Image 1: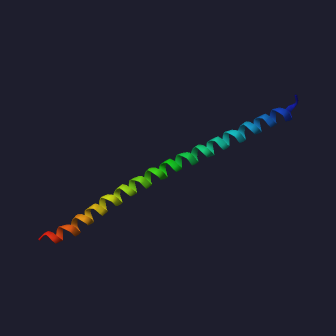
Image 2 (image 1 turned 180 degrees about the vertical axis):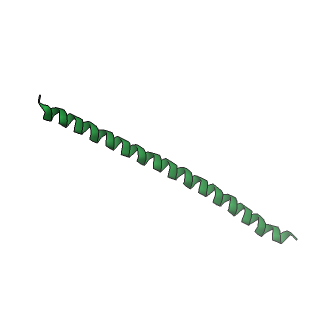
Image 3 (image 1 turned 135 degrees about the horizontal axis):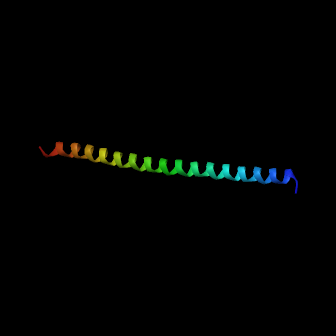
Length: 61
């Protein structure tokens, strides 16, 4: 086994490590984006509830 074999092993290991790192970052960003979307939906529901309360309170008086 000469040096090219070991260089090939190192290159493959580095490429594998980089791909794992990139996919890990991608999964993390997808989870963060999903959490932000859920928080935004919850805030929209709260605002919608407030507006409905204001609308219907005008009919009682």
